[in-house]
Image (tube, rainbow over all chains, first blue to last red; front, side):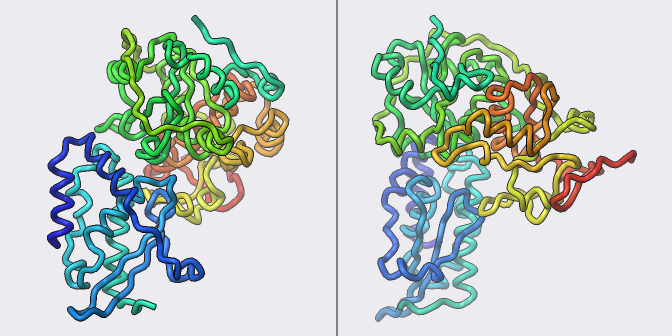
Length: 146
Length: 306
């Protein structure tokens, strides 16, 4: 697991169950807005249907001096704080990493957050679906950043 | 002391107007301090487990459908002891007037109200229009934590499921009596087994219970999330679905939440005495061995024998 994501997982695990929900709420507030350039290109966003509330994601490759990195962009409405929180955790933990690092993230990573009881197993599935979608998109080849 | 029911022209046409309150009524009651003196408790129940935390009606408490009302082991609701503990912790006594509201036209709020009714809580009402209408009207929301004084106690009352809850066996025995399927048309026809844009919940077969009429739940709600007028509801359920006065009705959806919204309309707004919510719904029926299923848009026939 990448160091940044592992740290987030530890932050959740170190908290009592009720407070993990609060931390997820804080993450939901920190989800960066979708860059302006996507506003006129909804076709570049994909909906993750498994999420309870509408969640759109797009993944791009970006060239840097240190090699190619993956950039993640999410959009979810303010009325869906849980979905936004999940997206924000993935953004904070994975944005800017290499494709190989993201592909190595264990599929059951969402369960490690220890939120399943506080959030419910059904809702947690949405986060697993998001991670799965990101990994599938990377495995299928990324679009370079516009 | 019982809190007087709201009287207005729209509600007066319903069979049980005392089951609804308007946003105006609630705002006035809150301004009068009704939440502070313990006579009413306002409960928010949403689809999203964190929505309440982003802003709620001042003084409201949160009850979550998954984590508070469902048993976390068996697929069932909590028992009398757990409900008593939950209610007391939320400041609710047996004689408290509970006002429930939530997102998405009160979809989950109606579900919470139905669970309260399983425990025979007498005075539980829905805020017509729910959370969205409250917000659309620019009314106050707060992120301040509600300071709950636990109630002096809530009696341990065992659930009485039979009058308002149907099990799979009850549905099989319901043959010949009306069923309302409140899912989307695609779920009804069997084209898909989950709501458009919603999680796939692992149902093996698609379609509907033979003879069920398709009336998607949201058709009972107006654009502002309030229930449609009595005349409109009659056109929907008596006209289109073909229900007749005195019918014994079972409503179902996927897990019993959307059908709680319809259950409320049939039971309290149109006044059907016997309306049961089949909470096993499609996630049980569509996975069950050897139960009849109809595909397509026609209601279909119950097989003569199996």
